[in-house]
Image (tube, rainbow, N blue to C red; front, side):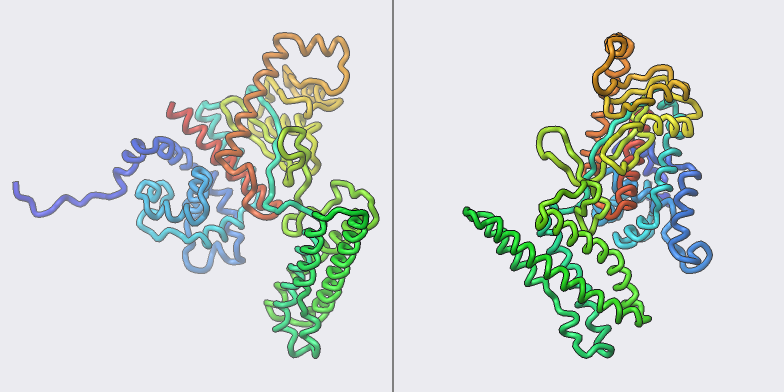
Amino acid sequence: MLIDSYPVEDVFARVPEVAAQTDPILKTLDTLLEDDQLYQAVHTDLGKRYQHTLVHGRHSMPVEVILRLLLIKHLYGCSYEETTKRVADGLVLRWFCRVYFQTVPTKATLIRWTHTLRPETLHALNDRVVQLAVHAKVTQGRKLRLDATCVQTQIHHPTDGGLLVDSVRVLSRVAQRAKGLLKERVNNVQQLCRSRLRTARRTAQTFHRGLRRKGEDKEAEQKKLYEKLVETTEQMVKQVRQVVSVLGKETQEPATRLLQQVEQVLPQVVRVIAQTRKRVLENKKVPSSEKVLSLFEPHTRAIPRHKGGALVEFGRLVTLDEVEGGLVTRYQLLEHPQEHGQAIDAVAHHWEVFAQPPRLVTADRGVHSADTEEKLKTAGVKQVAIPAVGKASEERRALERTPRFRRGYRWRAGIEGRIASLRRDYGWRKSRYHGRDGMERWLGLGVIASNLRRIALLKTA
């Protein structure tokens, strides 16, 4: 039969069928993400980007598009640029992200929207995902296991000399940027905004070459070089303080931005100078909690590994809770590298999400504290399988050898696999976002992506 044309067909009408064949997980995830409460939590944060974002201006990128693009990014471990390219090139991903035939946002747009998300919002978002898992009968929250892992920050290996050179480099950059704003106010602007980076680098290079030498005077020469490096940094601090005193009289926006940068960096530089004097020149110890390990990630801590490989990692210790079904219900950055008492907080959060206590709580002995077991039993937990710390009594050793305790403690081992999955597939090895809030944002998006994938896998199985 001769026909004039094919019938008009909606291109995206049959994409769900294609998605079910090529990637069944995306099809299930699409159904899970059709939840208004998920978008309302994100909508509140995105609406605070500017003062009148909710009522004025041209139409923004839709909230559901932003959330789905971020999930795609963390599901597949892509960069922002790779995410936008993959979505732009694929019909299935355009359908899943609800972009359709609209223009896919650039990576810069996606980054700016991501920075508006608060860590508290992502915690609430993960709680909602766990509630969706309960409705889908993926988990009932009967068992709870805890553990912690170190997530590294994006810093180079910290040394006293390296931190001093970084300090001079950052302050010199501030001074150079302020030169154009101070020409009319200061006569000797060249001297005031002088960069001392070359002097600092040459001193550091001389120090590193001297490490290969052997001799009795080696240590004395190293101290002299450190003194010179400290003096260079102090001179740079003095210059920048003079620059700040002049910039404070300016009302231009570039001057305000420079002042904000100096307010963030200058206190850290002063701490680095004091730390170097105490550690290197006075041969005194600095407590780990007081050390500055990075100018750009000041929240970084030194975490002892107590395992093979590197003795110390630089980042933050993160504790996480997992229930049966492989869902992470809570994650938290710890201020100090110890897990004592975390089981109590974990059960309290479990009550908020599931409205009931778990029957079993298990963790390694690092979580144990003097009153942990008593408080958990008071909260309604029937079995606590956490080994005691230190020398145990005969009664305690007999309890830990019972089949019931061993069976409960054996279930704890599964969380090691969850941590390995988060580190391998969802970026928990190293945070790619800056700052404490950035790290929580990075961890939260990884956990949400992991939980959603887990729910989809169990529902399609």
